[in-house]
Image (cartoon, rainbow, N blue to C red; front, side):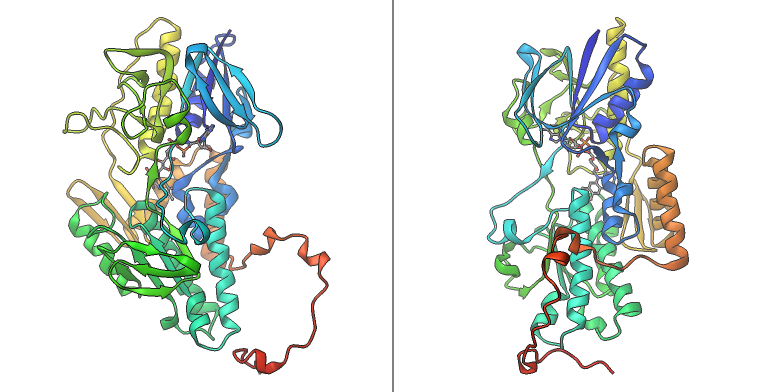
Length: 457
Ligand SMILES: Cc1cc2nc3c(=O)[nH]c(=O)nc-3n(C[C@H](O)[C@H](O)[C@H](O)COP(=O)(O)OP(=O)(O)OC[C@H]3O[C@@H](n4cnc5c(N)ncnc54)[C@H](O)[C@@H]3O)c2cc1C
């Protein structure tokens, strides 16, 4: 029996394996998925995880629950030696081991782009993974609790200052959602804080945000964020974030407790440097329109690729040579469809048929900007505000894989509509032993050392 190895169980890998399970005849091939995470992350829900509108666990689609006939290996592929049809897997604990295969599917996605800016590695949080979204939300909620116990002043201002670096799709969505949460928190639950103290900065190096929509709707998004109190810095580069002190190329400087890094994607380092498969100049897998690795002139046998780690020719684009690469959002649309086609093409070749090329015409761009606010664009058609937000929710609840996930997400939205969002920070889960290691430290502190603590009646 043939072994099909899927490297990465994210969007493209999950759909490839899921579809293969449905298409393969018994005994035709076995499927192995290797991923360090036991779940596929439904990344479009991360902005709502930030805002507490989607439960973190619901953005994680379990591989073992939904891929019943697939062998799931928890580990990271650190090298692919396609000449010998072998991948090296490093598990979280224990020594690395080899996995042999007949066919490899490379769907390891992209990684967050890093720039050597002082303070970013120490202070900023990315927004590509569930744990990052949870941490951002917890940091904001903790900052509210801490600020509410202080008198107005620099420390309180720093705690209530949030900075997003990168005004692309995920940055703007995360920014809009977090701003919506913070505004609601201040209004409903923290009367001791004033709305002017909430300072949200969005920093973008180019002269516009959301490159996925055209100029006018892009400008509308800036205006609508500014109306909500946000400060949008265009043509501004982050120069330093050392100790949370933000310095911009425009000369602006401020302290910010929470810095979120959303500057886009870079090539997956394993794909770029640790395989003998062909890659292009940006480190992306070279893939043909039928999703086989290689070029039309020199295809690589038994190797396939899709998603954010692969430069798949975009046959729907007017420009020749265009590829469906990350940062040309909305890319999940491509990853899902490529995953499904990839499975069909593998089954076709196993049965002696020709694979089909990938052609997908974009369904448009849709983004949430916080509860009740969104933007949608399809060619010349632009829809703004509540209708776009409802379309966003409708689209994503239908798009998240499996009915079980859809129902869980819907249930949370319905309960939140009745009772509001949960607003408790669980940042303390990072230190679970603190509670029993340290009995409450009630050593008196001279009150003069805590000048900011307000006296509650
Ligand atoms: C916040 C956010 C919001 C977004 N919203 C939208 C949206 O609204 N619409 C849209 O179309 N797109 C959206 N996207 C983009 C979309 O999520 C991605 O394009 C899509 O996830 C790409 O799928 P993929 O399978 O290529 O990669 P991923 O989904 O990133 O999956 C890659 C998988 O490979 C695993 N992996 C990585 N390296 C290895 C290795 N060495 N060995 C084994 N496994 C490995 C990873 O753990 C991961 O599970 C959003 C992205 C983000 C971050």
